[in-house]
Amino acid sequence: MGKLKKQRKKGLTDAPVIDEPLEEINKEELKTMTKGQLQKRQNMEWKKLRKTLGDLAKEKRTYSNKDAEEKKEKKVLRKHMIELKEQMEERHKQELEEWDRKADEARNEKQLSEIQAPKLSTAEQARLKQMLNSFL
Image (cartoon, rainbow, N blue to C red):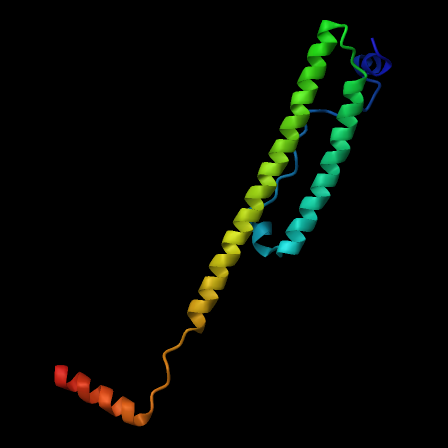
């Protein structure tokens, strides 16, 4: 049995806990963020995840493949590492898609508000009034 595993059993180590949830972003924060701020936050999250994955990989190397129980633990740890990475990729992809969708909606609303009816000359206005009066 490895030194880290013995320490973990006795509760003497600060080995990373694999069940800790990742930070979730509030939907309200996403509305006020610029795309650059969103990407910067995501880069920081990737940096934290890489550190966590490195710690987990270090812990995984302490397990032996000869002991069946340790081999199972190593396999579970590897699957958890893959799952963490996939969750992060999926979440970041969804956040960027949502940000792009909201930005497109805002652009469309702005374009619609900027569309104005063309200015008519007084002669054209008089002609339109006559046409309307003839229909009524």
